[in-house]
Every structure is written in structure tokens, then in C-alpha cells.
Length: 216
Image (tube, rainbow, N blue to C red):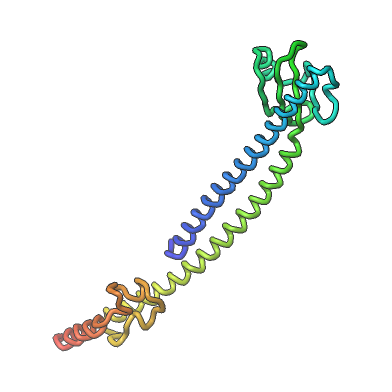
């Protein structure tokens, strides 16, 4: 695998991992927010239903959506209320997913049910937006990585060709910094803040000349 492909593959892998992690975090945060809001609303409705029950008012009046001994109340909440406790639960029902809140009263179990299907649709819409955003960001990052990798690979090939020419004595007047743009390690292989490798080409040329003179 070429250096360009290695860099592009690494950029793509890191981009996908980061994008997926961020997408999952946003998804979980949004689900938690909707669940917490629904649970708070259900418990508030249960408090209002308890007040209406004590005043002998209609439990289903207004927007309370409360019922006494609801036959579709989840068993876990029914058991909890039978033990004298209040609680809430997100559960599937005959009308779809709902947030339930229930507590004990003298006549049995008083419960409130809030529809959660709209919240699920909102979460699904957000998931689609996250998917589109993640795909676009990964594509853009990978494209940028390929372009950067191509530029680095091209500069390295130019520097390697110049270095081979210097080493063989064919291009004794060549400086790598003059062929490779930039002021990084590629343009100055020996470091030290110098833009090229002064002295390398003359030295190589001198060695080549001495070698030629010594040949019979």
C-alpha cells in the first residue's frame, strides 16, 4: 500500500470513528431528554390526578388522561403500586409506546398514560439528520485527507528522486530545498532549520569525481 493510500485510509478510519461516536452521543442525549420530559409530565399529571381523585372529580377531565385500575397498565407498575409506591415506566401498549405513571389509592391503582409515539418520531427525524451530517462530514474529511496525502506523496517522490541523483553524482548542483516547496522536514531532510542540504551535493560530486579518477 502506498503512502498516499495509507494516509487516506487512516484519515477515513479516524473520521468514521469520531463521527459515529459523536452521532451516538447526540442520539443518546436526545433520547434521554425526551424520556425525562415525558416522565416529568407523567408524574405531574399523576399528582393532578391524585388531587382530582380526592376531590371526586372526573379523572379523564382536561388533559390529565388518568384512569383508575387501567386494564392495560404495565404489570411492573401495578406491582409497585400494590406495594404502596409511586413510579413511572416507558412501555409498549395497545396504542403504541407510552410513558406511564402510577400510584396507590384506596380504590386500587391510579395511573396516567402519555403517548410517546410523537417523541419517537422526533428522535427518528433527528437520527436521519445525524446520519446525513455524519456522511457529509466523513466524505469531506476523507477528500481533504486524500488531497493532503497526494501532496505529501508528490513532494516525497520529488525529494527522493533528487536525493538519488545527488547520491549517484549525476546532479551535483541540486539542492532538495530548491525542488520541494515548503519549510518542513521534506524540504530540509537533515533538520537544523536549513531550507536544504548545503554541502551534500558538492560532497557527493567530489566523491564521484575522486571515484572516477581512481578507476583504471
